[in-house]
Image (cartoon, rainbow, N blue to C red; front, side):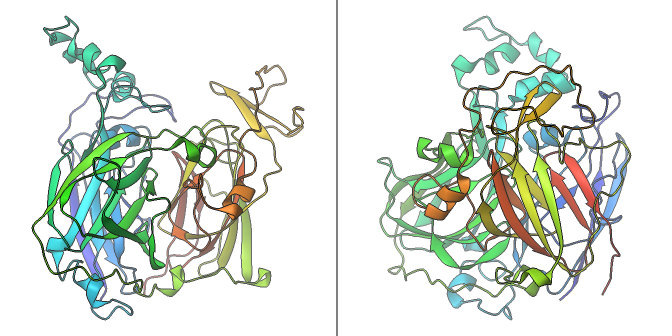
Length: 504
């Protein structure tokens, strides 16, 4: 059944607030709301990320959920250009669940027994956020630094003195030696969940942050799990079948959702934690990765002996079906998205004049190539509204980019200055070529080989609305668009594709 959902947003914050040029941290007291993964219109009054609730203002949203919308785990967060990351790390996010219906093909009694709306007591929603990320995490933006930059009244913290050290509270909490570096779970610090031995649960996991990735595992004090865990969905789209985790972990990049089915056959105390492994460095590059406990699970009591987890999952709608076997003649358009060492797409930062760079036709198959020119940085690519299917990782033969602050330039793999640069390039720019700039080449070979060290790669055929594009990589993805306008965002920059919005 088609659902028409109304919601309001009211902003009780006050002026003044920091104003800065475009593509800077700014507007901490201005907000809006964006849903991630829902197939709804990005136009007013639905999911327009360019509208603003200024201090004292409000917004009214109306979401039209079509009857063929996939069930799954989605989420919402603010999306004001300049304060999105700050507001996310302040805790402004939530989960959205589009529930399964009894008429869904493939909805087994087992899955029904652990899912809302049928058995919500076994449907566990877990939102992880870096709201206490004050000490150093590799390549992460410490929250205290962000508060400073966006002028979040952090000077008030100087009035509070830590008696044992004589430091201001601001200095103490951001001192790396004090180790104040935590993700919260549903707004709590390392909470405890109680479940019964043998009781199946559905876990919905969301990394609702804009910084570190999570490499999530479920283990006891000895690093061993007596639990059977199967991934059943990624980014709100069911997999073809329930499957074991790769090397016992699920990768949650910022904005990624993963659904699990889980049963524990032995009582005990377990932890859900992020535990990065150096073996995955080559597939992840210099990505910020969090290490720490997210949730403690006490397993006790007993229910009937658990049944094996079934592999069958509900059938997906056609527009998240399977296009892996599509012929080249069926592809209606091809487009390259190049990620740069600075936060830019196709060598262009988010423009002050919102203009469309590429147009597509509704309902036509597209093939896109996601390319990362950075020699070390992994870039997440977020696709708003529409999911895409991962086709393959192919050989990267392009240039690598080097930057110093806002200045950047490109070199060939033979370390020669490229003839084609970008509109802001100056021949007087002098940058230092990094040591071993081609270190991360070879993703296609590692992806094909599989096995250990490949946690950072998506599998062929998976649907995502968020994908990590590792340094010096080339990933082919396919899209089949339905009746929605598409907006594409990579980190904080945009390409807009405009077409007619069709209402059924």
